[in-house]
Image 1 (cartoon, rainbow, N blue to C red):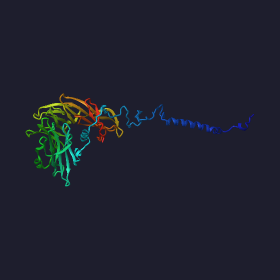
Image 2: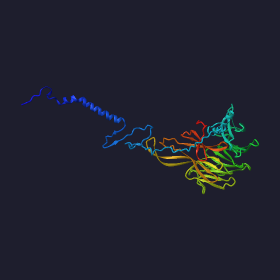
Image 3: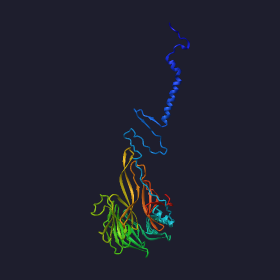
Image 4: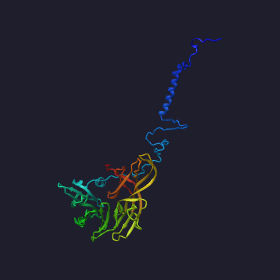
Amino acid sequence: METEIQGDEKKKPFLSHISTKLPIVMLIVVMMATLVLILLTAGAVMLNLSPQTVTVVPPQSSDDEQISFPKPEDPNACWISPEERYSNFTKLNISNKKITLSADELSKFKIKFKNLNPASFYKIPGELKRYVFNKEQDKVAYILETIDKDGKKTRAVHLYDFNKKTNKIVYEYESVPTDDPDYTYELKDLGFSPDSTLLAITTTTGSLLHKFSEESTVELFDYTEREKNKTRRWLYAFASPRISQNNKYLLYTEGYYEGANNFIYNLETGVTTDPGYTAYVAGSNAFGWYDNKMLVQKMDYGWSQEPIENEPNNGILLVSPEKLTDIIFLLDNKTEMFYGVGPIIGDYLYIKSNERALSDKFSCNNVGSKLQVESTFDILRVFNIDTRQSKEVLRTDTTNFSGVADSPVYFITDSLVIGGREEVIVAIARNVNFDFSEFYVLNDDNTLSPITNVAAN
């Protein structure tokens, strides 16, 4: 016997049952999809479809700090952890003491570091060619070039006195052109004696000496006739005049297009001596006096000249002008290259050197290669000539390596008399353009005191 199903109980097709519940199913699917989307966009968890692998991606740091995360799958991609990444090591030891310069001190500072023309004190027109301060820094001698309406050039030696606020012309010399466009007979350089009684003046072809007590200028030597007879003028100029403490010797350079020789002129006898110090890219250079002996810097890169037996190839010598074989080896340096000699204040000589070393840090260069960084440093040392003791007082990181983001830090030094005492000034530049915008006084404890009233530009 069959039982008949009537009305709503009659059997319906299978799909008709699903269609009646479709809105509910779709709602569940949409809710699940929304939940997954929220998790993904929040950056909390990302599901990697590789078997049994889940990678956690932390949210981005608010200060844009580099955060260590797993290496990318691309084996050629450059990746460096924060611990490995190279950063500039410069740490300046800044003192709480601050320095404010007086009006005169500020003017002298601007001449040394800001290219201020001393002629501007008297509104004298002309182009500054050279300047030099006396030891007390209460006078500055400078060479000013002027051009008249006919185009004739004249160079004059001026003397400005900071105490008297006076400016006067010490010596004047008309520049004479030659058939060589790179060669002109003209004034070139200046140098005070340590006691400020004499001023040495060099020209293209010779040297003169001005005596302040007599207000007179005398010619020491001149090689104009010698140069006229040359078919090719290899001599460029005489420069860097430096007078010994006893006012007996004049040390100067005879410069060429690519080098220079040192000579000693005896101011009492008029005899010139060649000490044998010459520099062509590298070599040796007599740069000053200490206790009436020449300070000589040896700069041998290892290929420019044969090493001299029993002499340091890179260091500082003290040589007697009267007996050139009387040599004292002050400083023999084998690990750094001395490439700059700074102020000489009393027994102290300030030396700038350079050091290179392979660091344990890395960078990514512009083609995506991971490189071990070769770091470079500029170092300032103070050397006591009397005790032969050397001490590092400043080190800046000058690394300018491919892929290193931090700018190099450079420094230069000079001296400035502040409050009656000669101080070492350190100028700092934090870019490759050498824009020196920070200025400090180097204290006895090797800290740096900022100079407050010096504008950056």
